[in-house]
Amino acid sequence: MGLTQEALAEYMQVDRSTIARWESGRTAPQPWMRPRLARLLRVNADELNALLTGRPPSGTQGQDALDHALSHPGRIDLPAVATLRTRFDDCAARYDRVPSAGLIAEAAAHLNRIDQLASGTARGRVQRELHALHADACTLMGQLVWDASQRRDHTTAKSYYERSALLARYLRDTTLEAHALLRTCYVALYGAHDAQSGLELAQRAADIAARTSPALSGLALLHAAEAHAMLRSASACERALASAERQLDRVDVGDAAADLVSPAQFGRLAGSCYLSLGDNRRAERLLAGTAEKLRDRRKSRAIVLGNLTLARIRQRDVEAGVASLTEAIVELEATRGGGGMNLVFGAARELRPWRQEPLVAEVHDRLLGLMTAA
Image (cartoon, rainbow, N blue to C red; front, side, top):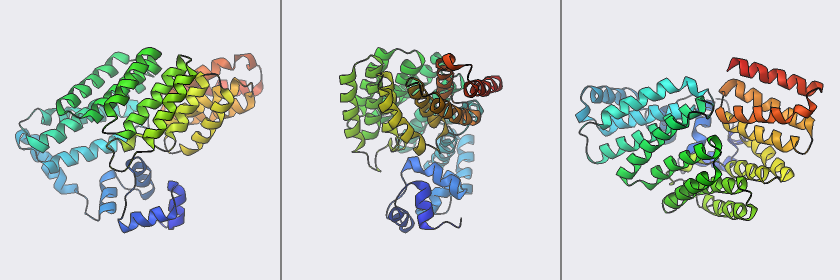
């Protein structure tokens, strides 16, 4: 691609020595980094894995195994499951960059195919891998449906998460179960606005994941902190943030949920907490720094920018608020993320006292265009 180690390190926001270790095979990129690296190198997930491991892409061999498995479900083997996993991961990796409505049909096809094969007679490791993939596919479907409905279709989303949790309990996989519970927590917190129920679900997810996944436990504690903030309990919020930080400091490459967290995660949730607690200046500092780190995760960035806009408006800094709101709209024009959409329209309502000012009138026109396109 014509990049030096230094240029690639700057793009990936790591040290040059990290790139050197990737090239030598001594270490590999964290899972959450891989979609960005694959886009830069213009390869898919399977091809990137081949570059990182030195093995040729599974390609034709994997497709042959999958075709045979679909014709003979009782004879599915690990290469076929690996091909299914790669294709599912490619679909899931696009969630944060494209509208969810455009992914639902593809994700549903993956889920149906996995469901068909998982109901076969496979045993042992093959069955376990299939059921784990089935649980992940259910979670993704719930996520897509909820996002595409602009966080309104709680019932369908929760039904998918319940299926995922049931599969996880069958496998005795506490990480999968905690992930499904945490997704259900999001529906309670950000859809139903039921902070108490959200808190209970987040704490359960954190407790279940504590022994097996510091990443997932830390992420759940961050959302527990936000629930405490919504309930106006500043001391409990601070304690949960501190606990989350300790868990996230323990994350390593072997953590099954490492791809769910990024270096920007703490600032994103802590900023949202302080916004709920009314500490707008502190929220602004955290959210502004986090927005700069999320340029490759557009739905997440739109949410951060929406909260940043609220923090600025509540400090009566209208010009800065309009600037971050405009950035959020740009991200949403590409992704239609449900969480970001709800936040930007909420921020626009808080701009009503200044609606006669030209800057505010202009951004309202942009919002009208966004609403019309939706």
